[in-house]
Length: 330
Image 1: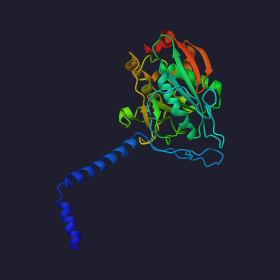
Image 2: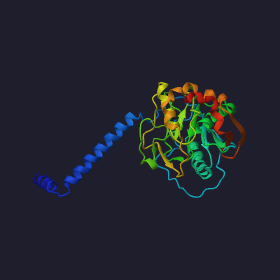
Image 3: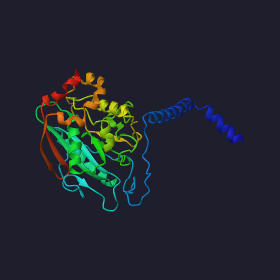
Image 4: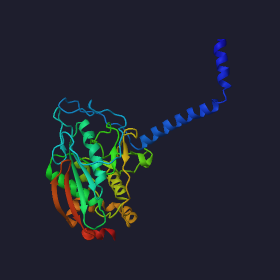
């Protein structure tokens, strides 16, 4: 008893005790703050509720978890085992849970594309996903219009395979770090797979964020009417999609931050959309501006061909491509 009392007295006289207590309190506060933010951001791990043995498990034993080291070095095109021509893969030891169309909007980012595919193909194979990678590229002198080319890719993917039931829209500059972040559509709502990016300190910046990597099944994408066709330049097209999702009575889901981690490949920002704030204020036009209105957009598919690691969709646009939708801006 005397020994314990003496030990307690020495501890209470420790000059570092206030600092130790402060650190302990801060750890508790940070933990509860993270828990609160993940709750408000609707962040949770997907649960395997399909117990049929014929399907691949949601978390197969080939997945390792933890953080993969992404090396941003010089990379060249090279073959990746088991990938069929056109960027196609399916597991041969079980039936895949979903058929994924991975859509990557692209323009003048060859290094980023090489690096992403170097890591993405093995990543999806470890998850035993059945997938097909589509790289949709805009050519011409017009400002980049990410929404149009993603809508085009959605339609062309369904023409290539009508059984696709999950569409993952993937920025070319984001590389996933944790293979427990399963590339799968959530039946309940669209799923934002990239809440934690290194350039943003691995935290979800705001609950409305959907940029980076977004997964929607066919029904969800059709209900929100896809992406807006009217954003020329960088900025706000993702926030527009967030409004569409919310107004369609979906509550966006996400993985927790420690799982939904991504490495951003640095690059120069594209030209900002000059009318982005006005467009975003008028997001309620979404039923008249989206994938269902592609027939009112003047675009041309110049070529669709299969490369070793992806299917390339080449789309030509001019700045006047959306003139039939300009009445929505009035």
